Every structure is written in structure tokens, then in C-alpha cells.
Length: 127
Image (cartoon, rainbow, N blue to C red):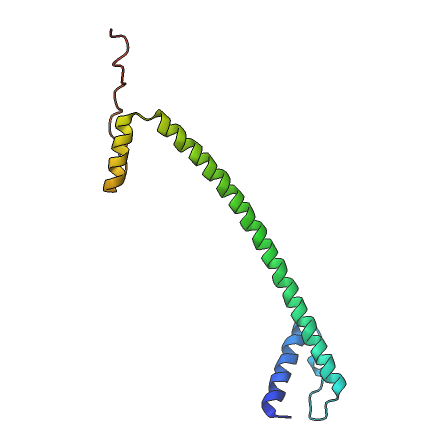
């Protein structure tokens, strides 16, 4: 058996044995290895790969559930913000909307220090 292949198999067996909790010294890999030991090694590798696959699938399923919940929350928040935006648009005066559009075009943030726009019908109590 080529030395490189022997070393690779020995490393693989040691690694997989530690994964599976078995003793790597119980598997011998000299040039007189029987076909049964090769089959046993293949079975151990397959078991380890199945174990890794099941752990990965479990982790992916958990992450998918977390992301689904986040998507649900974001959809609800988006709906709430759309309703709020619609309400604010209906309550805003044409002057406020024009000012807002001008601010959007210039890229300046809306200023909160401006006095509110006067009511369209004039001050209350005067007639």
C-alpha cells in the first residue's frame, strides 16, 4: 500500500473514530489488511457522514424557522408602516406634501423645527 494512502486512511480513521467515539487502534491498516476491515472502515465513514448530514439538516431547519419568524415580523411591520404612511398622507396639507417632495428631491432631512402650517380655514373664532 502506498505510504500516502496509508497515512490518509490512518488520519481518516483517527478522525472518524473520534467522531464516533471508537478506538482507532482497534482498526489495523497494514499491507495485509483484509477486505473485511476495508468494509468496516467504509461503514464507519458512511455512519460518520450520515451523522454529519443529520446534524447539518437539523441546523438548517432551525435556521429556516428563525428566518420564517423574522419574515413574518417584517411583513407585519411593513403593513403597519404602510397604513401609517397612508394615514399621514391623507392628513397632510398640500403645502406640507409639496414641502416634503421638495425635501426628497434635495436630499435634505425633514426639519422638525419649522412651525406647523396654518389651518386652511383661518384661525378659530374669527368670522
